[in-house]
Image (cartoon, rainbow, N blue to C red):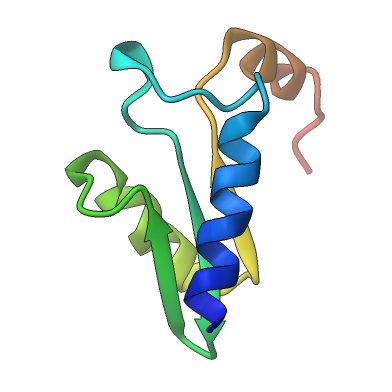
Length: 82
């Protein structure tokens, strides 16, 4: 049932205008922790998300979103690195 909840969450996110996958944005995705150490990545079977999933497995968060956006990139560029 957790995967159903994750899928519903992804569909909600994709309904928002800030997360619309397109040809230019094939590496956007969502990764949910469904059990300790086990993750589901959406959209399924997207080879561009393999490095994202590997990074998320090492960080072990509950959820992670990868978005490719000029606005996000510009905002993150202003965050100081510690």
